[in-house]
Amino acid sequence: MPKKSQSKHSRTAPPPEKSLPDAALAMIAERFRALSEPVRLRLLSTLMAGERNVTQLVEAAGTGQANVSKHLSILKQAGMIATRREGLSTICAIADPSIYQLCEIMCTRLKAEHTERGKALE
Amino acid sequence: MPKKSQSKHSRTAPPPEKSLPDAALAMIAERFRALSEPVRLRLLSTLMAGERNVTQLVEAAGTGQANVSKHLSILKQAGMIATRREGLSTICAIADPSIYQLCEIMCTRLKAEHTERGKALE
DNA sequence: AAGCCATACAATTATATCGCTATATAGCAA
DNA sequence: TTGCTATATAGCGATATAATTGTATGGCTT
Image (cartoon, rainbow over all chains, first blue to last red; front, top):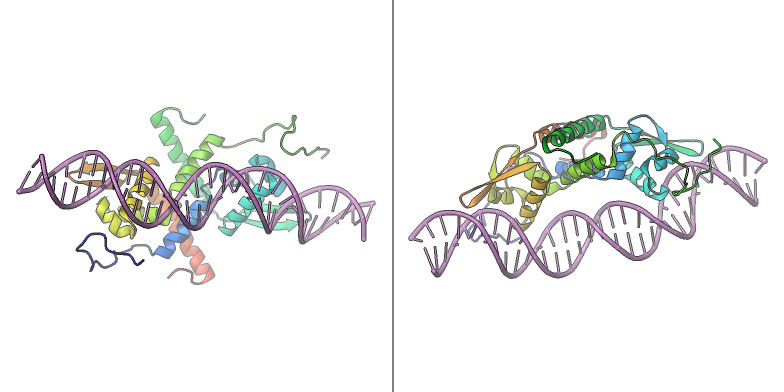
């Protein structure tokens, strides 16, 4: 059913001003979602040291090959990595330089919280 | 490479080197996950313009009050916003300054892709 | 106190996601 | 061709997440 105004006298409320359009937020959310998985972060972290093929990434990720393959396709679709075929193997590399900045910010923040609260990782 | 690739329980394979410990990746993933929802991004985007109470955020978010309340609690638990009680209302504000940097990076990247590929948002 | 307002919490349902196993494809080698 | 290796894809079960509805709590005001 159509959305009904929840408070009794607000039927004329115009849509609030949006600094960012919904479509932009959806795209940004999708990008963040690609980064919201420990396995995918491990893959990116590994790739930040240089190109790797899928087998190497499977070893680094510590989970099954099929799983890694799916995670890689998610990262690829989000534009964060690029792949190329080389003989039998698929070589993966970071395609989005902003990954480095995001990592920097997150790690900095993490350290800040760490020193602030005591231990939490180890 | 005379390596016998034993799938997961090869007893001699040492764990691969990890630049970041799993616990750190899990925490970073959790932070990214808090940012991976359009409604939550809308809330943050609204708060970036200044403090708001929950009712105002409900209007801005375009979804139900209960839903907004839950999203706010997620953002709060992730340390991204802080709340204080003021009379009847709960005032929310950005608590994590790195939000601004993340937004900046994402928006920049989004624009880059936009000009690169043509239209996609509007 | 009663009643209202702003917000939080609980229960439900629908959908999405993760990891697994099994299977399918692509490319090379013999 | 057959066979082997590296990777991708499909299907399944379990868990997680989001939106909704209803209810409960906290704090005014009278």
